[in-house]
Structure formats: structure tokens, C-alpha cells
Length: 382
Image (cartoon, rainbow, N blue to C red; front, side, top):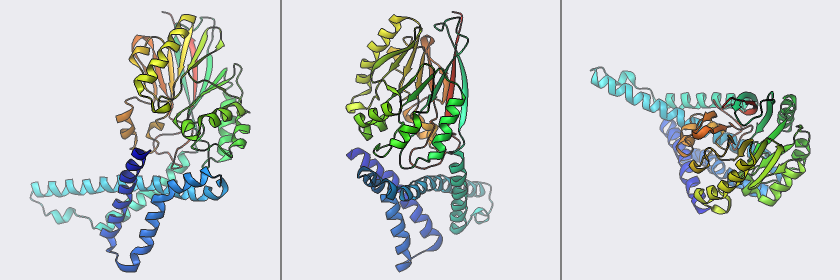
């Protein structure tokens, strides 16, 4: 926890400091004129922690508007930083080129005020677009041919949802649309690959009741993600059960005689190492493979263990949101060097990484649209 707050202080505090310096560079504020700006920046810096605390004591109705403002500011601030740094870099490159080509550098310089307003307007427009884009749900239809699927199966339909982050920022109308879109796909099976709830599940009974309407012939299964751990695993599992999902925590399930699901708990459980979590995953996959047929591994974080390759046919994951707000995807790629969508792995295994159906933090998505995945399993000749 101390490490998290240290990173939070350095990164989020640094974004606020950058914004303050840009304002100062553009307007040269001083004295009492500075107070409203400083107060706003302090309040916004503290907003996520205040929201978390108010949620933890059950003040959900009070915290909702404050959370919307605070998290929207977070997304805007990140975009402002990226745009401002890009404009500063472009100006530096133009200035350097002018010097090299013996032109007057001043001709390529833009005032600090112009740079600030350009960054401000671009960040505001992009934030607004991102908020709209976060509500436009995309259905990704993916056909996966596996030799372990029986030849008589004409196409087994699995709908994957992931990273809904149901909580104080959830719009009920949006959730109803997600449910209607999933049911409209007429799935044989529904799987939820973690972070279905956000940090607190108290007061989320209405979401659980809504999720009961999700229907699939062979049932609904869910695995915990890291946010289920943050919310309290027992409360999260109770939420899954209320919503009609069968929770899988390092367990097997067999919705069809030829299909085995392996659901593993999030690898951060009990602060265990990735190697320790892999050691617990391996015997489950070995048991599943002995049963024969197709093996689907449900694992929240898109980490593929080398020892597991060949033991599963398809791993379904989420967690990374494709960065959620471009260009954050390049930072997440440093930690999880995978691409969204379907990837062929070694020994005949496949990985599918869902972009996430909801949002965490800022209620916006930029060049990372929300996703419901329809996976159609078909037979493939060996």
C-alpha cells in the first residue's frame, strides 16, 4: 500500500505540477490570484482518495458527482500532459531545425499562452470525445478453430465480458444496454474475466439484480480480478452469486462434456509472486487436459506461463483495457507485452485479450473502444 501511494504521489502529483507550471508560464499569476488555482489542484489531487474513503463508509449518493468530476479531471489532465509535451517537443525540433538550416529560430516559436490554450482546447475536445466513445459498445466477433472441438459442433458461442468496474461511476442505462447486447448474441456460455466490480461492492445490489438477466444455455461463470480483491473477496463472490454467476477460484467446470473451464484467481492474491500463482495454475490445467476435449483458461491478467502452453487451447483475459486512454497503452505494454484481440501462442495455444467493457477511473476511452466479445469455437482438422 505504501508503494502505491508513493507512485500515486509521484505520478499524479507530477501531472498537477506540470499543469500548474504551464498556467504560470502562460499567465504569470501571483498573490491572491493563485489561490483558486492552487485550491482546485489540491482538491483534484486528493479527489480519488476522498472518493475511495467516502465509498468505504457507504456514502455512495454523496460521492457520485464528486467522483465524476474528480475522475474526469484525471483523464483530462493526462491528455493535457501528453498534448502539451508533444507540442513542446515539436517546437523544440522546429527550433533546432531552424538553427541547423540558418533560419531565424524566432519564426518557429509559439508563445507560452498559445501553447497552453492549444493544449487546453485539444485536451477538452478529446476528453469529451472519449466520454462519448466509452458509451459506444463494440461487439468483436472472433472465430477460433480448435482440433479439440468436436466435429459435430457447428459453432459454440461464448460471450466474454471483462472489466465492467461496476460501482459509483456506473450508469444504469449503460449496464442495461450491455445486458441487452449480450443476450442479443444468444450465447451458449457467458464468462466474466475479472474486475466486474470496482473497489467497493456495498450498495451494488441493483447491479447484481440487473446482471441476473444475463442468459446463456450453459450458464455463466466468473473469475475474480484484482479489483475483486480490493473490494473484499468474500463480498465480491457474494455479488457474483447474486448476479447468477458461478465463481471459479482455482477450480474446474465442465459446461459441456467436451469443454472444460479452468478459472484461476488473480495472480496478485495474498501478494503472491507470479511464479507462485503459476505453480497453482499448472496442476489445474493438467487435470483439465487429462479429461480430454477443449480447455479454456480464464485468467484476469494476460500473463501466459511458458509451462502452461499446450495445456490450454484458449486463454481469455482482460485487465489492460488497451490502455483505455491513448497513448497510455504504451505504458501498459511495458508491463504486459501483449496485444488486444487474438494471438497464436506456442504449442497450439491461443490468447484472447479483451479491451474491457467498462472503464476504471476516468469515464472515457480514447482509441480503445469498450468491448463485448463473441467467440465462436469451431472444429479444426489436426
